[in-house]
Image (tube, rainbow, N blue to C red; front, side, top):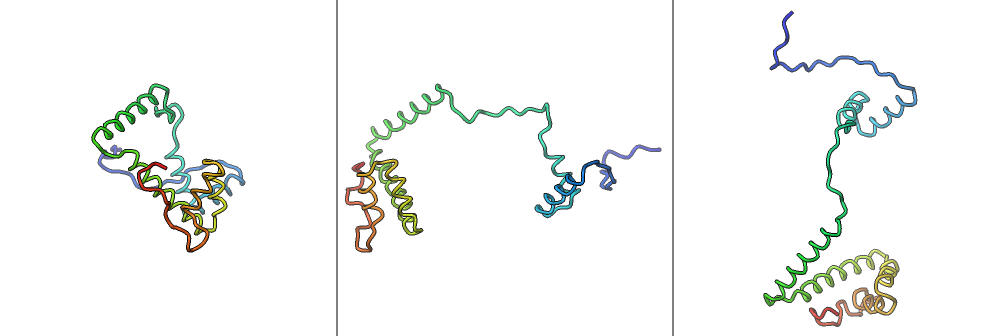
Length: 157
């Protein structure tokens, strides 16, 4: 009998036998149905996509060590100093961006009926007095209240 050519790929499926309990069979049926697949399709997919023991992939840790943290801190500081020496208003630009993001999020929370939750978060971060000032500026209770803060842009206040 001749060996099949390497160029030909056998696509004919063959029946295989797997032993399992009725409970395991039912669980596989539920899981495969949830994914819109037959038991066989789902079992093949699971078996062929698992990470095999002994085949370790090296992954970089998600935590930075002290040296990496210092390096990033120094790099950011150098960038900020470089921007400041170029005449750009680093604090004003960042402050304006943060104020815009904060205002948008607080107004959205107020519109969604979550004003009290927004106030809790502001109090937690800023304290009672400052939270009240920020809320008055960005989440007016009445329609006639000012929509924007009364501090000039770029002051960092």
